[in-house]
Each structure stands twice: as C-alpha cells, then as structure tokens.
Image (tube, rainbow, N blue to C red; front, side, top):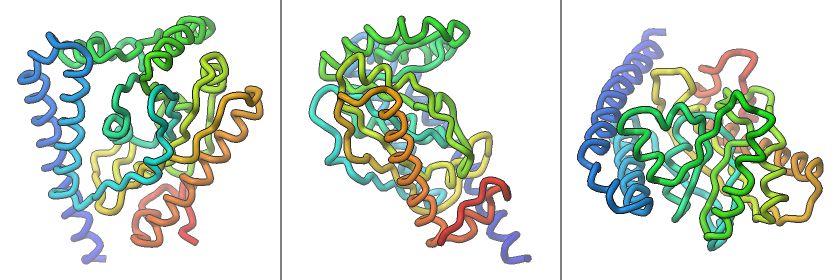
Length: 265
C-alpha cells in the first residue's frame, strides 16, 4: 500500500510540474508567436507543431510518457478527412504533426478567446454554433469540400466530445455525410490517450501513448454502412491499443472506474 501511494505521489508531483510548464510554454508561444499572424495559416501551423513537439518533450522528460505514431503510411498525399477517436486533449495537437495542411471543426466559442482564438482563425479552422444543430452540416459541407479540394486534411472527432476509456461509443453520422458529400478518403484513427491524459483529470501517467492511423476508407459506401464500418474499425483498434497498454502496465486499467475498465487479456 505504501509503495503504491509513493508511486501515486510521484505521478502527482510530475503531473503538477508538467502542467505548469505546459501552460507556460503555451502562453510563451502565444505571445512570442504573434508575428506569425502576419504570415498566414502555414506560419501558424508551424507554430502549432512547435507547441506539439515541446509538449511531447515535456511529457517524456517529466512524466515518462512516450508518443508513438503507427500507420502513418495510411495518410494519403493531399486532401482527406481524418476521423479520430477522442479520449483526451492530447490528440487535438498530436494529429497536427502528421497532417501537413490541417483544419479542424470546433465550437465557435473557442475562437473568441483572446490570443488563442486569433491563432485558430488564422490557422483556418472552422467554428460552428452547436446550438444550431440542424444547420451545422449545411454550413460545414461546402467548407470541407473546399478544404479537401485544396489538398488539405480535415480532422474531425466523430463522437463530438471526449469519451472516457471503455465508455460505450457515441458516433454521430455527420462524418458519413461529409465523406459522401466531398467524395473524400477517410482515415480512421485509434488512440489510447485517455489512459495517460484522462479527460477532466490533473494527472499525466507514464507509458507508451499510441496514435494509430488505420487503413483508409474509400468513398462510395452509403451512410449507414459507412458508420458501421468506421465505428467497428476505430473501436476494435482502440480496444487493442488500450489492452496493449494495460498488459505493459496493469495499473493503468486498475485506475479506471469499474464500469470503464478494459480487460488486458
């Protein structure tokens, strides 16, 4: 019991130091990078990758967490839609390292934040008003079509929000509509990030964080078949990544709530 408590104390202290330096780094880049706003989205995207790489370095050196990207050969050259499992804040900036000209969809309120919102606008992300659910796809579709035609990568989280590890999936059909309307290749992405950077948690746990790009889905499926296949691919691959991490460090699964635990078998 005392050894376990000692380990948890170390994780807490490392997490505290990481979080402090993570936000110092972010604030420093937001202020120091203001000239990037004068040079267009590519300069802002380059700055965002500096933030991502700095954050990875801090995670590894302070928290003992290493990042591994798998399946990057599945990312096509040019325009596509990247549909990622959303467990953590981590994937929101890690994906930018593998997408040379990316865009996101996010809630419009984030674009009103001083400094941070300025970068989002200049980066070319798409802000939506979630209260107008019936009109969101009408607004979003022509924009995504233009992005894909320009050879850009549009990143979307099909569940719309972060989901705890092991929680039942809640995929929404908007991604199927966008893929069909734009005739874009869709690259599913599986993660185990929620084990190491849980949503609504202060802690940052050590281990191997994996972002896995899966075999692309070509356009042509009807929406229902597309959603079944997308969810099956992402959930199966995510389950394997979580199980792999738990085999390497069983305490990761032991830390999960009982109704969200994942068997490492």
